[in-house]
Image (tube, rainbow, N blue to C red):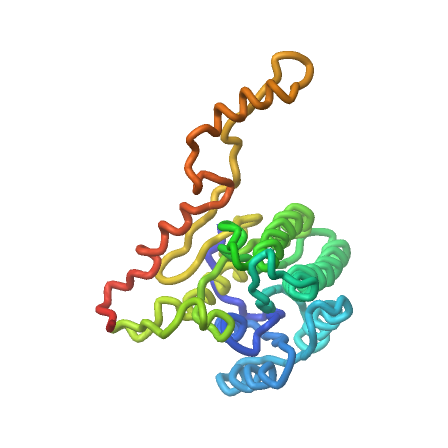
Length: 312
């Protein structure tokens, strides 16, 4: 198994890369040697390109809304035209419209699903078309990496984020489908559930909590390190996985398992029989014993522990 972490000669597309996580990911990939197509809605994309070029890297900006299906094709085409290849796709772009389900408007739902889920699908589809054709021309596997941005919100089913949680669950399913559908062509697809202190999460995570190390436990750069690894040749055997990442921790999520099976005595269940079996099974069950992965919350103490004194 190769342990090569370099991205020399590779080209990457990073969406939502004008600030926050996307910016940190674009800079990390460029630092590893990749040429980067930086996508965002406005001028911030050009600012990140300037940062990469100032550090000696190669980058170009493509502005636009990732939910525009044609933009996905433009991003892939730009990577090939400007840098000679398309090797890495990092889907990060997203928005928040946090509301409880009873306050959720149609636009709150549509906007979040459109930017997150359709945005991931548009770029993934365009990259998949490219890699499939390249594999046919090469008569064998090619190099391809997809890193999608899911969220702990889908693991918990965040009460104030029904739209965001649903979009992130969809992104996870899209990742698994991409991993299975493209593995024969040499492509690896994985999802990350990051926590990072950015403009989008300022209300949730509050003030910077930097210790003596000088790096905030929720710094986007901590997440970008995992993205850099997943984009590299060293991750060739990592496919169809979901990682929770923040602080000093990367946690690999386990696939859902069958907890219990209920079987009818005859050829089909009756309502009474279902009631007998299910009601007795769930009797006395705690409110947090649901499909939601509340155990992930237990990771926080270790994940955010830096070993450094932290000012109150």
